[in-house]
Image 1 (cartoon, helix red, strand yellow):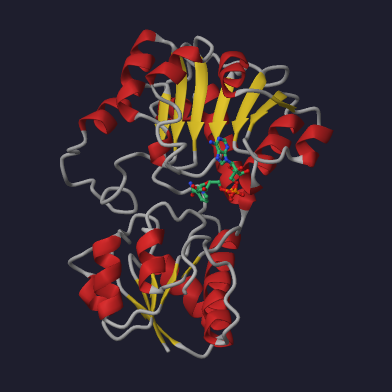
Image 2 (cartoon, rainbow, N blue to C red):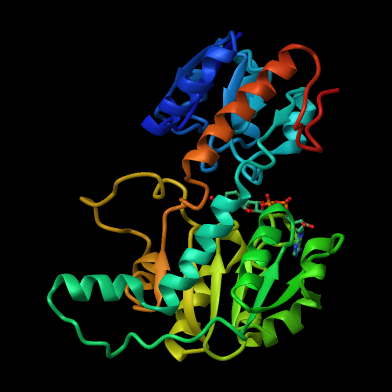
Length: 334
Ligand code: NAI
């Protein structure tokens, strides 16, 4: 069996190479993104391993199928970039890494909150310039404030627990079953509008689905507390980017931390520092002193990378042995 990893970077090569001796199939690393043009590169590989900004739409799946692909092994938790209906139609199962390190993502969300609140990027730039003044760096105590967690699955629960440890009141919104550990810490499940209206910090940890697309739009931003903080480490499409600039200009949105961005495809994970930034909304967002953007790095810890490599290769092995695991619902082969 042969496997091809699209959008491979050196850190993928390192972690998959380290994990591979436990598995006896060939792994080929391909730097290109997967899309309709590059799908041809997968010809002859039974297993295709895309990353989050690769396109796994119907056209790509058909091209992969024609080239002999039999399994899509995602090396991510999110699967919003895959046309599951088409994969199912073609009989190509899709497996994923449902949980690697929820701590990595939750801790990054906390990092964004602290950096925004205490203006750390600005403070660091200032002291490097020999400016030791404090004006403009005033923060607030997180202790005693309210944090709203949207989506209390694996990551949202870890995040909620950490914020409870800061002494914050935790509000949660999730259409699924409430998390016992959060309830035990005093979290309250409330309707979305209540969460938006009462939270000083709102953090997104739900998947991107048709129902959650633009969950935070202009209307939702208006419902938030004046000057509140919004953190998105979920998926870019959860937030209507165009509505952010106006909310930041008016002060309605006090702080914004993004690890994911609606139009991040083709931009994030790449070095564009010698090129003009063509995305006007992102360019404007980056100009606000109360905005921090990181390039989809929340997952990026050593532990998470090792777990991703090990689970992905383990998923492939299980499928080869006829005992598929971590199959994305809706993409089961017939
Ligand atoms: P999970 O599947 O364990 O939890 C998701 C939760 O969201 C579930 O409890 C579900 O009931 C809830 N949910 C579904 N629809 C909702 C809605 N309309 N409103 C509120 N909650 C809703 O997923 P996990 O592992 O916690 O990951 C969450 C998301 O984080 C992933 O879907 C992925 O998009 C994102 N992620 C981002 C990473 C990054 O590097 N920035 C890395 C890993 C995941």
